[in-house]
Image (cartoon, rainbow, N blue to C red; front, top):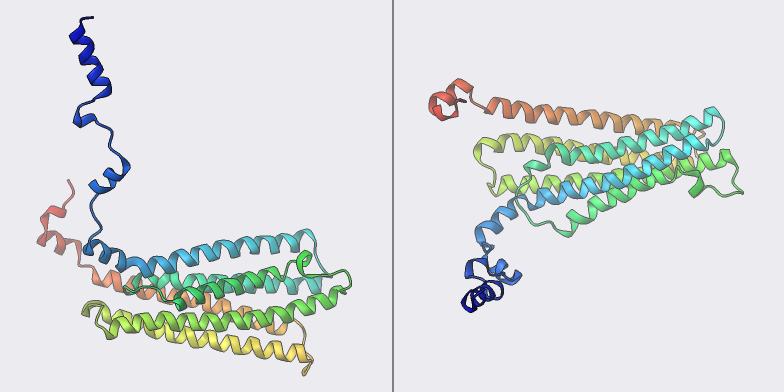
Length: 288
């Protein structure tokens, strides 16, 4: 190898051409497109929607884990006789219905939220709902809540009373959460964030939210009355009466979500022009 060839190879190895030179990470960041006002506005448009959806998905994941533990506890270590055990399963079903109702609300309407930066209320209310859902299940785990000195029948009665107290708190916080969501939509309509073609459907959805909020408040009142009656023993009633009423009402609320889903589906189906009309306007949509 000649001296010139050796020098050339040395330069290639230790002094590569500019197009092959290693670029430091800081230089890479400078080469990326800067975050400008337009990109921030695009992020801002979906920030509140993403906040609600991601938070509720996280909460429901934790709550379903607690639901699985509670179910495993009821199956692996049944507490009480058959007529007592079914009360605990009613409480479990009511807890599951509460979780489904709280999760279904954002899933059927959060996509239409206007752009906004979440406030502390948008953070605390979903978290409080999640904590109350978690407690609805964990009190059913006898290994966690039952002590050795408790009589089984007494423990089931105390569990049902505690469940009613937590259910009333859950429904109250859920009602406040729905009112908070309603506030976002109402402000969007008031500030004309929604165009004229969608403002009507948003106003219909606001009516649904108003009904849901008051319905959740009504269930909270019934649960609170049930807790007061059973704790004070003012009226002698079977332990299962109020839990069954609350569970049935929550299941009805879950079914009510289907009406909202149909409302959105009808809106989008009626708002889409026929395929022939779109192809007549834009022939490029024709598939090859």
